[in-house]
Image: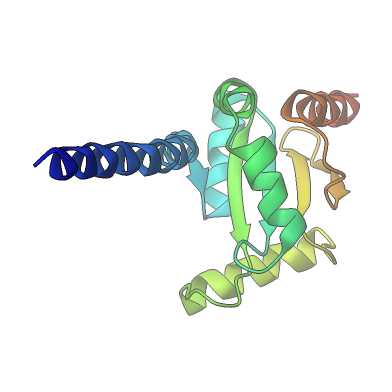
Length: 162
């Protein structure tokens, strides 16, 4: 009986130890889901003009590109980026997955944006100022933390305002 109680105690402790990392992953997912990503650039453009905010377009290979995954994990899913995105930009998500399905219309739309903004590598972040109709972009991900990355994005935005 004593062995059974010890075994059940061990089993409960083991179960709880696996539960903690899982809930941490869910928190990251919840943070991402709080962001208002647009899939349609034209709708984002309308919103940009109405709210007087630039557009941030994330071109990504979400399911195959290691730097894209790192950017998402380190920057995009961070609380700092969430705060920045909610107040400073209109977000557009432009994905080029290899293993997950997106509609043919979305593929065409994404390909069109890729051509329009001259995107050749992933990840690429394009900042588009709807007032001046100017854009700037950053290609790749160097591993900066969220604060440094956001600082660079803000510099790009400021440059486009001139």
